[in-house]
Image 1 (tube, rainbow over the protein chains, first blue to last red):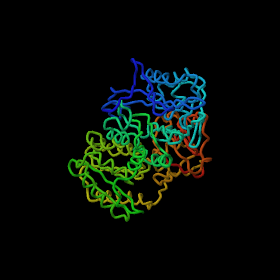
Image 2 (cartoon, rainbow over the protein chains, first blue to last red):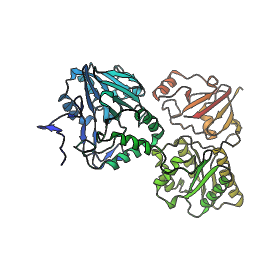
Image 3 (cartoon, helix red, strand yellow):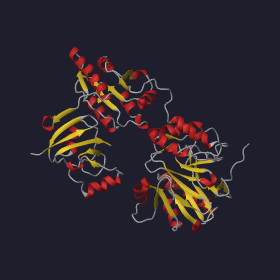
Image 4 (tube, rainbow over the protein chains, first blue to last red):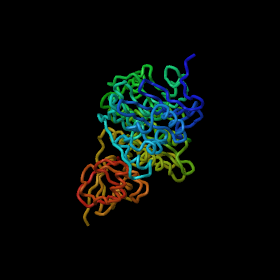
Amino acid sequence: MSKLPILTIDGAPQAIALSERVHWIGALDPNLRNFDIILKTANGTSYNAYVVRGSEGVAVIDTVKEAYAGDFFARLESVARYDEIKVIVLNHLEPDHTGALPELMRRAPQAQLYISQKAQSMLKALLKQDEFDFTPVMTGDKVSLGDRTLEFLHTPYLHWPDTQCTYLPEEKTLFSGDVFGCHFCDVRLFNDEVGDFRFSFEYYYAHIMRPFKEYVNRALTLIEPLALDKILPAHGPLLRDQPQKYVQRYRELSSSALQSEISVGEKTLLIFYISSYGNTRRMAEAVYEGAMAVEHVRVSLYDLEGSEISPFVDLIEGADGILFGTPTINGDAVKPVWDLLSSLAVVNLKSKLGGVFGSYGWTGEGVKMVEDRLRGLKLRVPIPGIRIKLIPTDEEIQLCRDFGHEMALDLMGLRQAKVIDMADLA
Amino acid sequence: MAKASITFEDINVTVTAPAGTRLIEISEKVGSGIVYGCREGECGTCITKVTEGWNNLTEPSVLEDKVLRENMAGKHNRLACQAQVLGGTISVKPV
C-alpha cells in the first residue's frame, strides 16, 4: 500500500513537501459533483496552491476557493511566515484559485502580486477596489527569490484570456495553472500514487481546453522545450512521474485524430438536416447537389436522426462550412437542431461558413432563428436562408440547388461581391 | 446627402448608406455576423474590427473607449452600435 501524505496533524492542515523548497498548500474538495455548471466531478476536485522558498524570500503561487481558505492558510503557516512572503503569483484569476487572495494580501501586505497582462482588468473586477499594486508580466519576465527564480510563460486562453504558467528552472518545475489539470480528488496527491485519473484528465481537456486548441498548440511550443521534473497544476494530481507524457498528450489532443483525406486547397462543407415529411430532406438533397458542382469542395450530407450528437461535433470542428436544414414546428426550429447547436461550445467555430434552409407549414421562423444562432456562434452567414412552404416545387428545388452552389462558391472565395444601396434593403 | 460605402467582409457585401447611419443598423439589415446586445454602447457585444477607413467613422466617445478597454478590445475595434459612418469607404468584420 502506498504511503499517504500527512495532510493534517491533530486536525491541523499541513503543507506537503514536493522538494526541500517547494510545498503544496492547497485544499481538497471531495464532495463537489459539478464544476462551473459544465463539468461533472464524480469524486470531487482539489484546489492546488504552492509555496516556493528562495534564499531571499517566499513566493505563493495561486490560492484556493474562498470556502477552503482555512486549509490554505493553515498549510501556508506550517511552512512560512506572512512577513517572509515577497511574491504572490496568480496563474489564473478564476475564483477557485483567487478566493483566498484578498485575505492573503491583507496578511502579507508587503508581497508583490504578479499577474498576466490580460489579467489586469479581471483583477479589478474581482477585488472590487481600484487602488492596489501589481506587476503585469509576459513571457520572458522573471522574478528572483535569491537562489530560486520564477519565470513567466504567457499562455492565453488556456482556458481564460488571463491564463499563464510559471516555471521554476532550478527545480525543473512548471506551475501550470489549469493546464494539465483535472477534477480528481485523491489524498495521495501524486500521479504515481492516486487512483486512475486518466478519464478525468481527458474529460477536463475536452471541456475546458478543446475550444482553444490553437492556443494550446502555441502554449505547447513554449512548454515543450522546458526541462521538466514536475508539472504542478491547479487542479488534480501533481504530475511528478513522467510529466512529459502529459505535455505529449496535450499535443495529441490538439491535433486531428485521423489523418484528413482532404487535400490542400480543398474545403469541406457539411449539410445537416432533419425532416418530418421529407420536404426539408428534398431541399437538403438539392442543396447538396448544388454544392457538389463546385470544384474542390468536399460536401457531406447527414440526417440528424441518424447519429448521436458527439461525432457531429467532431466533424463540425474540422469543417470549413456548415449548413442546417430544419423544418419549423410550432414557430421554432426543431429540438435535434438546437441540441446540436447547443453542443458546440467545446469547439472553435469562428469564421466558418454557415447557412440555413427549411420547409414550413404556417410561418417558418425556424430558419431565421438558426441563422441568428449561427451568427452568435461567430459563424459568417453570407447568404440569407431559404424557407419553402410545405412541398417544394421544381422551381423551389432549383433555388435550393443555387443556394448550395452559391454557398460552395463562397467557401472557395469565388462568389461575386455584392453591392447594395441601403435604401433598397427591407 | 453624403454617402459612405461600407463593406462587410464576412459576407462580402458592400452597402451604400447615408452619413450618420450606425454600423449596426446596416449590418443587421444585410445579415453580417456582427451580433449585438444592448445597442446602447454598454455591453460590448457588437465589437467590430475596422480593417479600412477608420477615419470615415465618427470618433469613439469617452464612454465607448471605456467599454472597449474593459472588453479587452484590440486596436482598430469599434462598437458597431456607436460608430456612425461619415463617408468614403469603410471595411469591417466581426471580431
